[in-house]
Length: 270
Image (cartoon, rainbow, N blue to C red; front, side):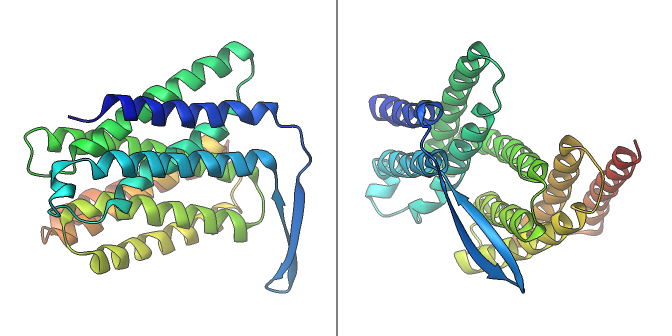
């Protein structure tokens, strides 16, 4: 059983860090550089640093909880860094979600919802340390659903900024890399093969995100289209790692990608 006291402390520290963000009014700094012959400015703000701190707290808390698992203590489990990915991205997504709250009541409700989501996510991460446990499959399904929800939320929020494609496409590719690595780790195909497939998925998502910046679609439409493409790509890669890739699987995921582009075309035509 997971240590509920440590889990509660981890969630409390993450929420405390997120709650401090609205209180910070210190001015940020802009770091300028030149990329591909043009100027690129990156804003460094206290809120952004606190967001990274919350992600770091999530990683540290999850690592402490996972290392208490009997399989990890006995050396039967693999590396624990894989379990950091979803909680860290969830903390970052929660920070951006909270910054969009319109009222104090909405902010409080979103903070509680973020805490509940992190609780379920970390509990599920602990449950899948032993992939042969009776409930591991159900918890893995929960994590898969949360991973795709995270992908949709982060893709939509990044696309909504409408900043340079060099930034948005790179960030989306990085998110796709981390999430696909987490999703494909269940195949037990080895870190090198999983990383190679994840890099391929990330490259395609980055290229799609770059192209989408030229489309006049809403953030919801763009985010949904990208997550459908991500779902299809990661699904095909996962089936390939499982050695279960067939014509039926390719047709199924091809239809998902077609649905994504139809959605994008209709959404941008409005």
